[in-house]
Length: 327
Image (cartoon, rainbow, N blue to C red):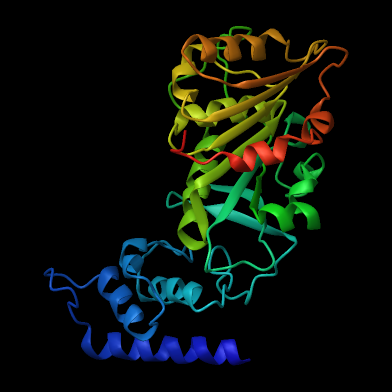
C-alpha cells in the first residue's frame, strides 16, 4: 500500500509538472523523453546521473514518453512493477518462472519465461543467464521448453550463490535458433534466424529495465539450443561473457567471432544426431586462433548428455567467474 502511494504520488507530481510546463528542460531545442526523464529524476533523488541515458519503451506501447520515464523512475524507488510486458499487472513475483511475451517495435514476438531473484537488489547488478531449448520443445505454449532447463540456477543454492536473472525463450514451430543451408556442412548464413534476432532484442530490452550486469551475461543451450548458442555469440561477439553449448553444431569458419567469449563445450562421442565432430571441429578452430575453450566429451554417451553437463560440479563456478572484458 505504501509503495503504491509512493508511485501514485510520483506519477501525478511528474505528470502535472510535465503537463504544466512541457519545458525544454535540457535546452536542446526540443521537448522529448530526455526532458521527461529529467523531470522524473528531479522527484526521485536516488536516481543516478546516467538515468537520462536509459530512455526506452519500457511498457512496449510503441512510443517513448513520460510514462516510460515514470516507469524507469519506479525501478529506482524499488517498486519493480511489471513494466516490461504488462504495465497493469502490479508488482512482479520473484522466485518463480513468470510467463512473458516479448514484442519488438516491428510487432514481432517471442514467448519466454523470466525468473527474477528474490530479493532483486537494486543496489547491485545481477548476472543474467539465457537458456535455449532443443528441437523437441519448439512451439508457443510457453511451457514445454522448461523441461530440460538447468534448474540448479533457480534453486535455493544456485540463487543463494549467484542470484542470476534467468531467461528461457521459446522458438516457434518450423523455425530454429540457427540455420545450416548446406548441411551437413556447418556453415551458417550472414544473418541470424528470426528467433535468434528476437532473443538478442529481448536481451537488450531486459538490460534496460532490470539491474543486469552487462559484463556477466551468459548463454546456454542443448541440441538445437547448442547450435543456437554457438550462433548467437557470433551475432554479437561483445555481448556474452560465457557460452555453454551442449551437443550442438558450430560454424568453424566463424571461430574468430567466438574468441572474446569463454566457451565450455560438451558432446557425447556416440552422438548419432549431431555428430561429435561438429563440436570437435569448432573447438579446434578456436584453439588454432589462440582461443582457450574448455571441452568435455563423454566417451560412452550419445546425444542426451545435458543432464550430465548441467550437473558438472565445476560448471557454474566457472561460468559465473567469467566477466566480459577481463582476461
